[in-house]
Picture 1 (cartoon, rainbow, N blue to C red):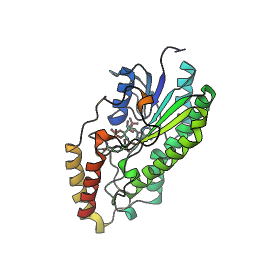
Picture 2 (cartoon, rainbow, N blue to C red):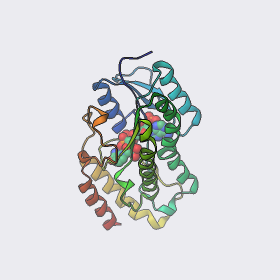
Picture 3 (cartoon, rainbow, N blue to C red):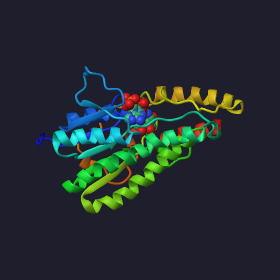
Amino acid sequence: MNIGSKIALVTGASSGIGEATAQRLALAGYKVYGTSRRVAKASQRSFELLPLDVTSDESVAAAVGEVVRRNGRIDLLVNNAGFSVAPAGAEESSTGQARSIFDTNFFGIVRMTRAVVPHMRQQGSGRIINIGSVLGFLPAPYMALYSATKHAVEGYSESLDHELRTRGIRVSVIEPAYTKTQFDANFLEPDSKLDEYREIRASLRKTFTEVMAAAPMIQASWPTSCSRLPARRARSSDTRPVSARAAFADLRLQA
Ligand SMILES: NC(=O)c1ccc[n+]([C@@H]2O[C@H](COP(=O)([O-])OP(=O)(O)OC[C@H]3O[C@@H](n4cnc5c(N)ncnc54)[C@H](OP(=O)(O)O)[C@@H]3O)[C@@H](O)[C@H]2O)c1
């Protein structure tokens, strides 16, 4: 059992923001468990990857159970796993597709929180950081479902912080803007495409690719101590929310 360092669990740590976060936490001295739906045997990473699909109750229970079995505690949970259906007219996604994006981006966080909080409550301490988005407080035409999931993450996180702070647990939501990762390469196409939106989809896809290519790279340079993160929403200054507002205003104008 590991009793030396603090224990962190980071979902969606196979790439992008999750991977950089896990690396940074490892550098800061945390014993870090990252997660991915596809865990390769040989890994060059500074942290261990555990298999996890946040859409499965069983998978969540197994991953959290494994970390607790090995270490007896979890000090920090970073809920990062997420994806977008984009660009897509809101009427171009079936209700099944709408459910599936909520299942990862929002209910994935709910599942992880329900699995981890009992351990943190027992410890009398813990920290949960949810990766939301600038679209958790701004509207985004042609990304309505994704934006809706991130608005849900914002409401859940802020409410949870008020609820759990009396038990020694603090909850933050980080709301990045464009950050150069695999995020846009992993966009899902809408499952009920309409010809009506073909041109605007093509034009927005081009704009997204250009904006993401020019976006700041994610670096393992986040704060070294989670206690330095504000307990409330952290609209990451690194990712420049003001430019994000401008960028999304541009997209809205084009639309
Ligand atoms: N990049 C941006 O501009 C930006 C801006 C605002 C917010 N965000 C948010 O930042 C977070 C990370 O995105 P990113 O930009 O780093 O994109 P990314 O490189 O595509 O990483 C997404 C991660 O989520 C994981 N994931 C997806 N579905 C999952 C599931 N069902 N269960 C477990 N893991 C799952 C993926 O892991 P596997 O595929 O290996 O399972 C991957 O590690 C997301 O929540 C995204 O909404 C990104």
